[in-house]
Length: 412
Image 1 (cartoon, helix red, strand yellow):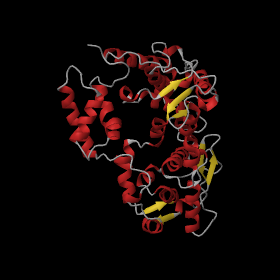
Image 2 (tube, rainbow, N blue to C red):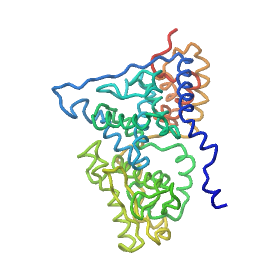
Image 3 (cartoon, rainbow, N blue to C red):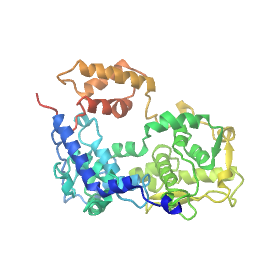
Image 4 (spheres, rainbow, N blue to C red):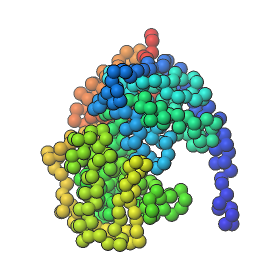
């Protein structure tokens, strides 16, 4: 029976063996979807470097972030030592810009990126190509496809080492600091109710004073199997390491008090010490270092931030009331950084119902996304934010009703 538990699932083996077939099917479905919706290739924003402007003077900060900086920031929040996941996140940022018709493309290329035979139906460097590339990079078992690993390596060299990619900084940071729907809908209510906090959650609160940050923090333990392998000696499991990477980014760009954001701007995550200060304050609050104290472990050059989890760390608990008495919540009128989103759940749901009716009343598809958005913000004033409309209300409905706006508009 012991041998049977180690045997790979035959269905899993079959799916991995046919990774190429699944990739081909997925990409054909993407191509056919866009063809059915009458979507043509988007323009490719080639912007060759000016030989008179060396290095970072090519589309400089703060409006633009280099592909290398975006890669390093996103690598903190993905699987350690893996290049494909952060590159896939970059593709997602480029492909998911819903307001490009009004704001212009959110990326620029110094040269065309490397490609793969599977992507031959898509114009290299276009929005559609990046969307197809995202599907290929995130496909389970794709590493078994011939040429896949070489593609990942070539993309890294092109976008990171040779600095041939620029992304508008706002879109990269929005992706890096965003919350999945489940954080708000499932984890946040639970985080608000918890009267007892673990060491990482108490530390997250001290650094951010934000319940959403607590909701993003998973359970911290030592790895219990090979798939949860730690990256640091005596460190926590990998998913917790990814969560710490997100927390460090959130602090550096939204709650920084050490001056790193002001001094280093898009590279703030490399210099911000606020998460360490929060750890120090909590250790002092608890009475100082002890053998069971979890410790932060930084390896930003390799793209991860972890925490040790010694024996006894599971038993460290704090009363929420004690932490709030020592580090009270920041009042709304005292917040230095404006709230990113003021939508209500009911407002967004009612807007979805309203938008479906508005689509039906515009069968010729003459109204632009901007016109729908302005009308929605007026109709649901105080209950719907522009960000909520762009990121949660519009995307799925627009795609289902053939109004996703990827590429050129449909011609009458």
